[in-house]
Image (cartoon, rainbow over all chains, first blue to last red; front, side):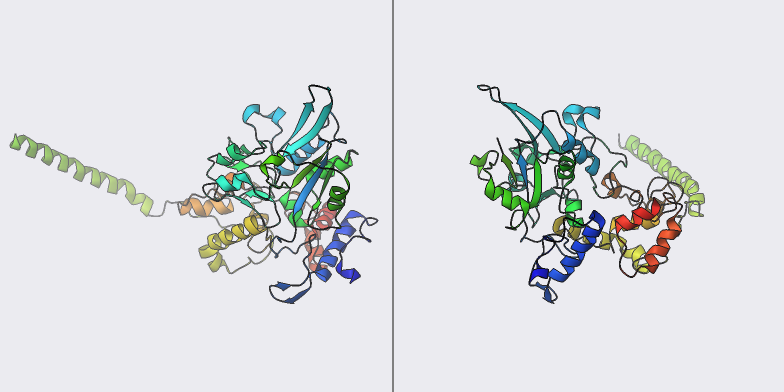
Length: 260
Length: 165
């Protein structure tokens, strides 16, 4: 059975490209198919490209606000680089500039304690943006990632009104072929954090912001499969107290915060 | 009063008939073959499209539409009918794009057929960075072809990129 459980023991020491190949191999070995369409064991990471996203997985993120550094915006710039949106500071119209992730600095008025945290789409299990979308463009993928289908989005911005987290933005101006090949986006459509769905589908198992946060040494972000009890995010969620923002709305968020 | 209306009608009819003749005369040369024919440049990369040329000319929009829904909604990212792969092969050598100049691959046919597409309002018209096996972004493109042809297992994006550097 050990070879059925992908990548936990062998993965860390290997160099990244090798590791990716290893995961690919493990996925082939572990995704045990007895007949077309019937899969015995589903694998979270390294899903074959012809397989749809699986509901057995729920992608989520843990934000450790106690480690999130004041003045650091590595996650924001990494997101902008990966997904091709112009950083707000460089935009000609900052107030309407698309923003997939933003840094918040909060201060407790009584104690003056400062808290830093990134805010983005919380990838709700019960997303209000999906409830209100008149065309069905706003949708939740099987693996819990909330996305906008730009082919059906009419840019009405109802979802932006419905989102309690102010996570979505509309592209107001033509982008003139500055998009990334992996991340189509364009004028007249609403957009938000996608949990780097292009990276997830590639089998990277992480997002640009998490990579940047780890690379900068802060380690405030963890990304992973919340349905897999052995994943790092599940382990951390078991061990430390976490909160959902506006938990009163009962939306079952995919992004959890520690230290807020 | 009736006479006056009749007169006006007659003048109107005369104007219309004259206009029709003038219009016809103006259009005649265009029908004689002045419309710019689409320029079909052979794909820079690869020998054969994913389907026969005839099939693709008639049905590329159907396969692209089907594939786009599978990709966006379900996350299926096979390469066969992916718009990204079309662009990787068909981007022109001059502009590096499928839709920048008027004789680039997508645009030249669509303007001839007077079909307005909005794919490239959102999708990039250019192949992706160092990976795309394209003479534009690597003098070593032929090495990549050899690498891909000689490899026993599929060559990954990273390995391709490394050859270019």
